[in-house]
Image 1 (cartoon, rainbow, N blue to C red):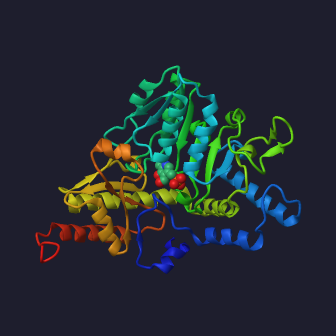
Image 2: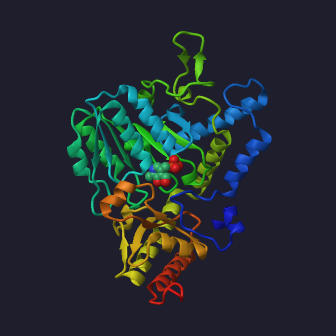
Amino acid sequence: IKRYFPLFDRHPSLVYLDTGATCPKPQEVIAAEREYEEAFSTNVGRGLYPLAEATTERFEAVRSQVARFIGAESEREIIFTSGTTASLNLAAALLAPTLRSDDHIITTELEHHSNALPWIELARAKNSTLHSAPFTQDGTIDVEALLSLINTETKVITLSALSNVFGTRNPITDIIKRIRSRNPETIVVIDAAQMAGHFPIDVTEWDADLVAFSGHKMYGPTGIGILFGKHTLLETFKPVVFGGGMVVDACADPAEYKESPFCFEAGTPNISGVIGLGAAITFLERIGFDTVRTHEKNLLAMTLVRMREHFADRIHILGTDDIEKRGGIISFVLDGIHPHDLAQVLGEHDISIRAGEHCAAPLHRKLGFSATARVSFGIYNTEEDVEKLISGIKNARALFDTKTPLHPSI
Ligand code: PLP
């Protein structure tokens, strides 16, 4: 599968273990974007000549493809944005007019900043109450604690399907069912950024109201994302960004806007990004999520075993060892080596991992770590990558364990 990704032709020795940040793109995604730029390069939804009509047709076909990919009832439930961050900010902006000062918003302590800050700011602007549900020892949301925060004032609950730090999956269908039995009026928002591309998503089975994810974390282009919204809910929202392409009658007073999702997509969209996203979905569906999952699970199991084997007394791995509850992400801290030093030393040997707070400062603060190292897998990783990672960590440990001063003169 690695041969589908031109990045590895350009960098044959690269061990890329930062898929949680973004994915290299397969050739067919790059080709699809290029094909649009070279052979179409026209706008969507406005031109009346054949080339523009062909572009609109292709663009709208991807909307239908995304809807099928996530089990939405209709393509009218799919809003194109620039990424998960934009989708979650849009969700907060769409909900803002419906929020009163006595309403409550619930989020969790394991959220990425993109699913924390928009709600913190919304609560501040509306003078609403914001609760943050804790996580458990194994790195999943503490569901009982979350449920205990729900009352008749709870308007919005927002949580992630798969933590970008713990790597653990939250049982979304079950959580939403339990939320609805407490308060059926609550709007449930799901951050699926780390789920898309690794597990199938079924928004209808989840029964989620709004779901956000990014193209670039599922082998698609950067700058393209999705906000799914239940059709019945989207219909109740008013547009929050205004301009071309979303209006029926701009001379009316008040102006008359198109129906959803078009009224939420003002201006020229990222057309090549949408076309590339369609190619990424085709790519993923051809490989199949069973293959994706089996592959990532094997690498995950192998890495956890090797890490425990070689660094047992010195390593702290965040979250559970139960593979079934995990996606392909492992965050860890090694005694005696700062994660930044580890990432830098590995980087010098062409092994790319992430180090820092991973845009989840509250989570790190709660655990008492200023930073963690993070390894995250994609479909292109191999067992050889894992072996190189483990020997790279061993080398880094030896380097930092030495009693020799870093410089002879010190
Ligand atoms: N949510 C989670 C869980 C993430 O891991 C990320 C990115 O790492 C985001 C949201 C933000 O995604 P984007 O940068 O594509 O907007």
